[in-house]
Image (cartoon, rainbow, N blue to C red; front, side, top):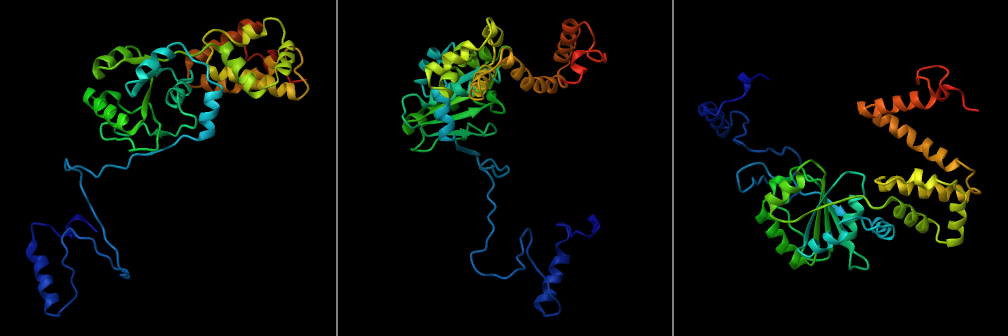
Length: 321
């Protein structure tokens, strides 16, 4: 069908003529401008409702949100190491809303979940999709202790009065809200000016404490933990857990040490080799998208071995024995 075949709203006489013929029994016709025709069997209850928004735009999509698994919350609470600034976040929490800014992979979500779960034995937490329009969103009247929103699409779309409205609703519902945002230059100051509320900057916790906490959670027997730590060579922990190490890497080191202990105990240097084997493919995959990291890995290969990684004599290219 071409555009010429589509009846135009400027030619009503053609449609009316067909309608008149149908009334006279001279042929079938359907007269339903802008209508929807159901040609199937009618069994009752069939209808279509099109309700535009109050502003006359498209019908808004339902907000996507769902519960945070209880076992995930429990693990986050057991293994939580309070990061720098946690006391500040607790003070801001009393208002009902915390805006938390930090780099991805530094424990932001664990920080947020513990802020929401604090004071509840079995907290009910809900995660709201970052695409949700918080200026229109409202918490449930009851039954939820806290809401987590991670990286909303445009935090500057919110206004100070939107947060004031949410604070009132959250107080009535007995719940709290934590909004987690990715770190960016100047973001904290800009948000504080825009929203007129304190913004908490998240920093990663001490990697040694994260390592110790995860090891204790996976291996409750203190004597066994002490035996595992004695298998490490002097200086291993300093090399494994430098300042600023992302928490997940410290947790991975603890879990790897525990697994090696269950298999009979790590041999000297085995923990380092195992972690390198697990993290190597991930680093190489990231280097494919990050030229700076790729250059760093190439320079490490050259200066550590004296040969280019492309050199057939490079140890990384030799068959494993």
